[in-house]
Amino acid sequence: METQTEESSIANDKPPGCCQELKAWRFELRNSIKDIEDLVKIFPLDVEEIKCLSAVVKIYPIKITPYYLSLIDKDNPDDPIAKQCIPSPKEKDLYFNAQDDPLGEEKDTVMPGLMHRYPDRALVTLTNMCPVYCRHCTRKREWQKGSWNRQDEELDKIYKYIQDHREIRDVILSGGDPLILSTGKLENILRNLREIQHVEIIRIGTRCPVVLPQRIDEELVFTLKKYRPIWINTHFNHPNEITPESTQACDRILCAGIPVNNQTVLLRGINDEVETMTRLCQGLLKVGVRPYYLFHCDPVNGTGHLRTSIDKGLEIIKGMRGFTSGLAVPTYVVDGLDGQGKVPLQSDYLISREDNYCTLRGYRGEVFRYYYPEDKKHENRYYL
Image (cartoon, rainbow, N blue to C red; front, top):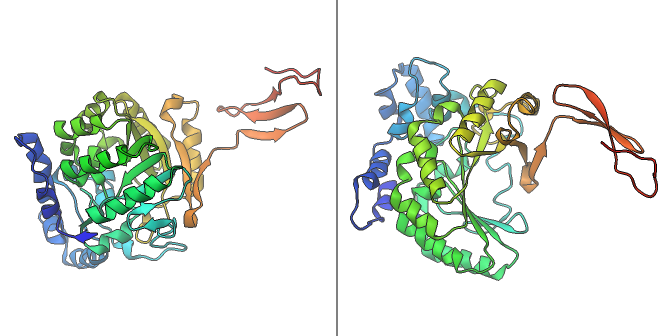
């Protein structure tokens, strides 16, 4: 792992015939807001607010691309985009059970950059850099380590581990955001993984389509297409993030034959209403993105003010189930503490089980019996 500036990382990519769109995403990164002084130029803050937020960013830095900043309604004190990227004094508050690494990722890390928790899957952290530092980030602990990319020596050891563990059929590239790396470096990583015969699919977790859609350029998409099957998991949290730019970014990926799934995080005051979540998921379907997971916000230090109750998540799923297409209803999951894995949660539709039937509750609240199929022990059973 080599500590470096974001600019030096970007400069490593020198594609032939660099065109205008390739310059656009670099421009966004180089002109991002990275300190409170930059923020004050755009948002009026008084002396006390500046002092308070300056203390916050010493612990949890700030970075916002000009594009994502442009989505903020500066006249709305409760703007859902602002709450995701602008620091809050509440990030310094202490909350019960909050930790730096509540999911036990470091415990399941078998070597620097490689986490092997589930039997047939492995997760590779390629960088700790992101286009935007989301205030609800699960890996907020990584922000204090300077900017780094995983180096070739580390990656070679990761490839060797995956090669030696034939049960690994699914590799997830994560970070930070993997797509902040140069296209050349990404291609080298994809090529090495594709040379491992038992690796069937590669997934990339990225928020670039949402916060840096300029990154999804023709060169990147052409590169990704060569190493299919690849799946993209992205991260829309609010309908306001579905813009012409983010729609075009997703469409480029989809037109290359690469599916795009969405992993939303349930966030207080941002998307914790049935109407908001329904608009988000319906909007995603309209642009060809599948609502995949609704994650309960993890108990990470610095994120407590954005967490809701589990009952709130169940309420939202219940309010969507049956009232919109099943395709628009994500799976609501809690990521278990200390490496216990994802736990899917549903409202109580199964009320009871009897000898030859169960009692169910429909989405409108009606209760009815559902009979089991006939079998040799119960010749008189009927089923619907």
